[in-house]
Image 1: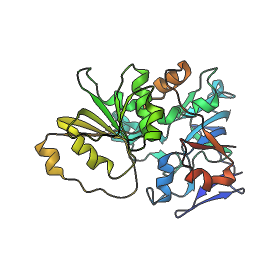
Image 2: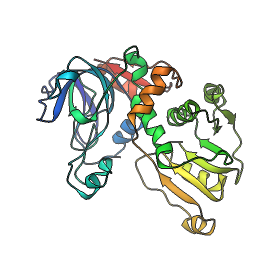
Image 3: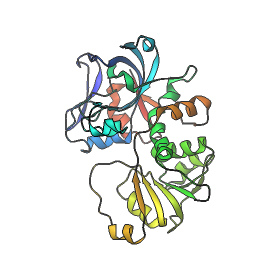
Image 4: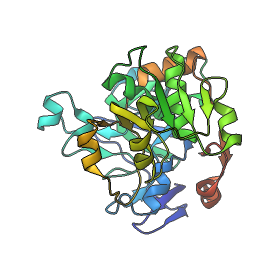
Amino acid sequence: MKGIYYDGEKASFRDDLPMPVPGPEESLIRVKMAAVCSTDKEILKGYRPDFKGVMGHEFVGVVEQSPDPALIGKTVAGELNASCGNCIYCRTGRQKHCTYRRVLGMHRKDGCFAEYMTLDTSLLHQVPDGLPVEKAIYTEPLAAAFEIMTRMSFPPEKNIGVLGDGRLAYCVVQAFASRGRRVTVIGKHPEKLELFAPYADITLEREPEAYEILVEATGSPDGIRQALEMVRKQGTIILKSTFAGDVQLPLSLVAVNEITIAGSRCGPFEPALEALASGKAKFPELTVFAPEDYEQAFSYKGFKAGFVF
């Protein structure tokens, strides 16, 4: 089987990977398309130092074997976190934080950068009829953006900023736009900001204490420091970036200014699939590479790269 394998130090293309065998509660999926996430690139920098296996977690595929007969032959997207069902987090509705979880393409679970993959059947979501694969591929990152709205409310009187002008910020803007909320995007690259202009207000200005709520979506260690300067006293920062390495913060500033910092990652697939299928969320076309050209895909500077198997 062809795939992209991480050995703990570097990625490589292989054509000798064993065919995955699904467990009793898993389905076997033929991968149709997989997309490169910034987190995949961070793995190459040491973000998941204990991981070895097939990379990737954003995919659309067809179910070929499943304990649920209704899924066989269906096109699906899938969540990342396979939980144990028994720990304190599973018993209290926080399965994605399961103590013993396996994370697709990141921790104790081979990912989707291969011709075939397995995944817990409970984590699969059927792609609506009529939603093309090249649009459905954005389901997982858009779901992560919708998690922001799951975690907290956004009163209309509070202005919202999104710090960053890359893919992560774009997903956040699309989630808000699909709910009819216009936000302000603060970026560094005028050419990138143009992509946001139909859906959000855009600016290059990093105005101090300008936002009641600020979504940090830069993908950079410097983003949280910038966010602390731009959020108002008693305001809220929603941290979306994940990256290798540590960050030093002036925590006394957080305490004195009574700033709330909330982390946010994986989210609900249903609103993401609905927004994509209805056209409320719109994304640029994925740039496709052969898996053999994974190095080009990982270094691609355009909006988003992916693979077709």
